[in-house]
Length: 372
Image (cartoon, rainbow, N blue to C red; front, side, top):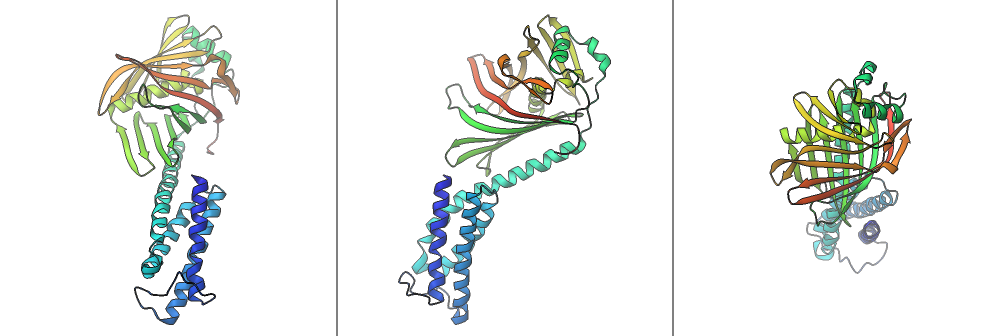
């Protein structure tokens, strides 16, 4: 798709040189007979010649930005399209065929522009979340009150990294699907998490097919959750919020504590011992509450999380069993903290098990200051 875009920008841009050459009488151009929809006079023709050249330059600059993978290429191209179409309307009898190229470029540039704006919106929301965050300072006296498997996990995998943390940044890759027999769709995501107060923002891009992508944002802040999904950045295909979404995002935050284990010492969590390998955690934030059971192996590593979470059924939600399985062999150390990097998520529904998410953490950074 990128190569096609480059070829289209180069060819369409260079074709506009014909108008410049014609109006400045640099050569005999048979493609343009000079019949305008509106008479402009001799000076006006020279101005139009300059506009033909400017349009060429804008399209070529857009191509350069695409080649350099600069996100702002769409702005240049949209300006070029507007200028190009204005000229085509003036030279309609000779240049009307160029409208098709402009429409095709418009279909490519608009989603790209919307993606830039969606990312900018994400950055603003993330920064606002970080501006509210403070360094997490747990009560170390709580360690002795935790269930034995949780204590062993913290001591062996977090070590001396249980305080002084402000936020965590993660990059992720993986694939997901919307139904049991559905196609697995690859995605790339970034996530930022704070623990004081408890909040996260997850931004994702899913590539459905060449030229067809979905942008998503999942947020949890002040005990409230919201998920927004847009096709091509243009059309909202999901905008979930309300009590069920609040509970779902809180349970997600609780499960993902495996990446910020110091939060286990938060006073917002009530721990209960089940047995030597399992413990239940109940998290309550501003009236939103959720619980889940962590399972630990003999190496004191969390290997599973089970909870009741709301499952969306096209407008209605029902509490269903939600299962996260962590790969115990995927543990890596980031900034002194050992975390699982691979996990699989599924729903255990009445009709059977529905594995819908395969995720891998590719990088994780723990921050203590206010810099993003």
